[in-house]
Amino acid sequence: MKIAVLQFGGSNCDYDVLYVLTEVVGVDAEIVWYKDELKGYDGVVVPGGFSYGDYLRAGAIAARAPIMNSVRKMADKGLPVVGICNGFQILVESGLLPGALMTNRYPKFRCDRVNLRVDNNTSPFTNSFKKGQVIRIPIAHMEGNYFAQEHTLSELNSQDRVAFRYVDEQGNATSEANPNGSSENIAGILNEQGNILGMMPHPERASENILGSKDGKKIFDSMVEYISSF
Amino acid sequence: MQYHAEVTIGLKSGMLDPEATTIQKALENLGFPTDSLEMQKRFVLELDAPSKDEAKSRVDEMCRRLLANPVIHNFDIEIEESG
Image 1 (cartoon, rainbow over the protein chains, first blue to last red):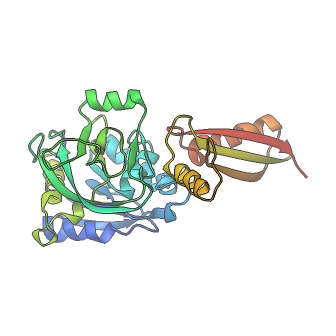
Image 2: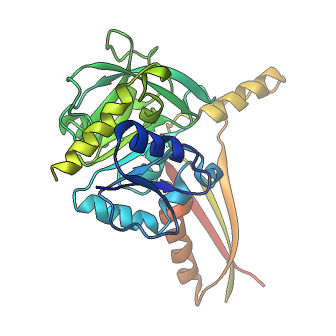
Image 3: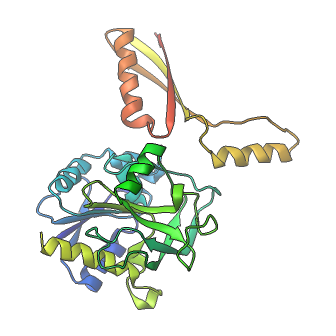
């Protein structure tokens, strides 16, 4: 098993993800430069950062890079794909996930630890959590305000495709607990087949006790387990 | 034939734009109250095409595939012969 961590010009969480996969989770993984061939991998992580300097719109240019066609083909085969932060922005811009990520409601960069409620615990990324469990993972973004049209939101809800919502410590999705103005406090969503996850919070920054939380590691652990049983 | 195209892209009506709201408040603080303020992006380009219709349809596709995000944006295209 080998997992690819994509690298665009301006990616900056690529080596954090690689470290967590290889050193903490203990799985074979490598960085794949966006101009190289994406072949022979069993899963993909699109990491955070500022690909192409956020030119035009965050994630817009990277989403149109040819390597994303290979990511699409892997996803079509059912292999797991995770986009984190800028990676989530790239996945929505590429159309692999619905909606858009807009400038935060208070237009500033938010870097904070937030509480997330696990709303879907049946996906390959979230099946080691309990449904409704509150986990703690940091965010660091300026454009994390998830927007989708009414019909998309109702589809996400009815198909149980909201993976995570921003909540308070008790698990309530209040407006105070919403760090960026996202529709319905949405922090992470799944595609229809459930094998693509996009999330604004950074699980790779919450994978070791020394960083204050290991909740994020479970997402990578589950992904690896899913690949093993594929 | 050479064509000159101007593309204007803005958020769909009713969508919140916190950046525009902040700028509007800053203007108000300077003594310039306004009833509304929208921010738009404008792209100015020159391109070769066999006809004006063809030029317009190419720019339209550029907007759909990259320049605009159809989930949140409207766009407007103006085209004229140049050169």
